[in-house]
Image (tube, rainbow, N blue to C red; front, side, top):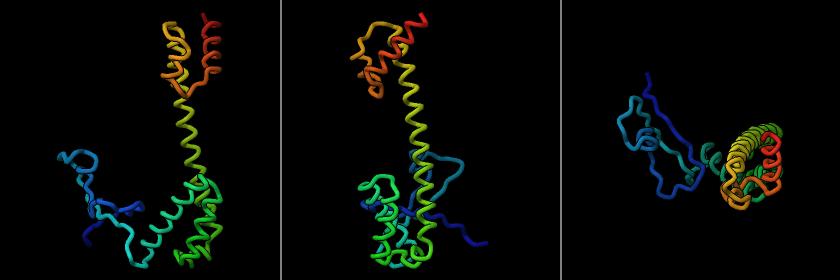
Length: 166
């Protein structure tokens, strides 16, 4: 049986990051855990292999999303730049539409998750503001400091709802 090996591909800047990471060290302060996992970390290098090209693709993509946001333009610019730099060129020439479709679906999933988190946060903030308004000890300005996701208009709406229920 071949010896198992695990790898992590890191698409950021190496800096002073280690060549190997350990589950117990990274997440449990080095504690003795029942399952220990160690993985070799692969960083960008001077090689022209497929993994290095993938890392470069990810870095270009990160730069483009900073400029264009999570948009199709970021994806198409990433593909254009990478083809110009001969990064994954053959693959991108053959499967450009597929890559755009896959990356856009990842955006959709990420956007859905972000939207869900914002919605949950907003709901929690509304509940907090409602309790504060019912308590009656803080001004709207003070409440707004503690729940900055809510506008003054929303706070007034919550107050009106609270008054109707009282």
